[in-house]
Image 1 (cartoon, rainbow, N blue to C red):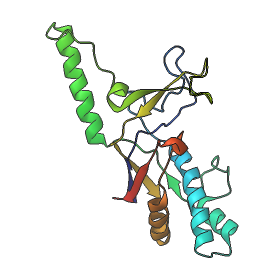
Image 2 (tube, rainbow, N blue to C red; image 1 turned 135 degrees about the horizontal axis):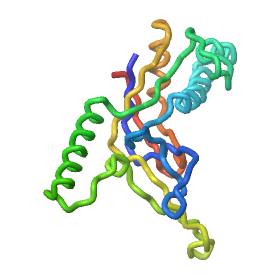
Image 3 (cartoon, rainbow, N blue to C red; image 1 turned 45 degrees about the vertical axis):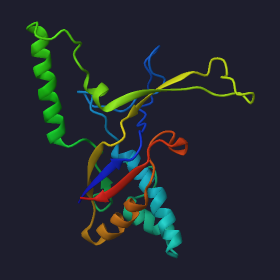
Image 4 (cartoon, one colour; image 1 turned 90 degrees about the horizontal axis):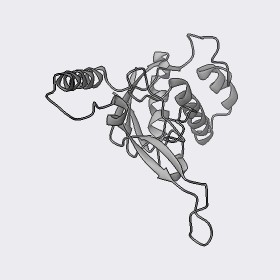
Length: 198
């Protein structure tokens, strides 16, 4: 089963790292610089929403249903092929191929003296930098609170493959449709998403 995630706002897929003097929060990206969202991280968001869904629908066996579909919490170390698995959310292969081709052509032009522009980094195409600061009660910026954060651009569409039993597909589809936010700072307007089957 394939699903897609449309970014309705900028999103922060934090990788737990920073670039001193540049980024206080960096995003997850592959070896080329394409941003992605980890399937394992999404599984945690899915688990949280599935638990709510089961409560709202009056399911009396919430814990056993969660364990049956997703396994025990924190049990990702061993693979259980009867459980739900989400692959990483990535850009489509067509988009990646087109971008890499364009960058390769621009790099050749630069080498041949046709262009004087700096080569474009893949990460810069799909992300932007945001600056935050903490504000004191009197409305002034708190000293030393300036933070730079790299965000994945609004409007991108990322795809994931879901491995599940055919009998669970309808439930998965309903639950993913309820997920409205992912990533870091989602309570501050980042990471608004629309997720659906494709």
